[in-house]
Length: 128
Image (cartoon, rainbow, N blue to C red):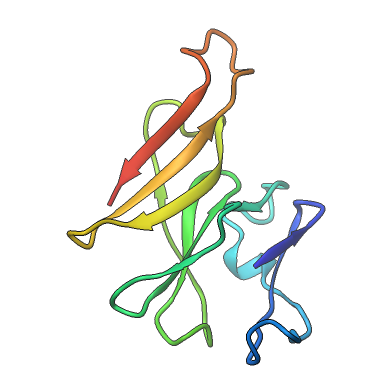
């Protein structure tokens, strides 16, 4: 996944270990949370992961924090539920996701230092 101007979301794939890539497909309307009202979209800097179950998971953020996932090796993609909680709605981004030993997911988010009256800079975490 990649974005253009942090407004449009695209997916492309490679079948030769990244030597060549397919033409990007615009998936903004299907996979951008809050579309069309929300203008911003980003994906996690660390990229996505493959769970032990085979599911592909990519962290994303726009009007909320969420994941994009595939259960068919990337042939189709879906939006997961949103992450909610204190400080999450407008001041968290640059998400990363990992699978824990027990199979649950942990997401980590950069917290903006610019939030008025903020508790400070740092990371936020959510467990699923």
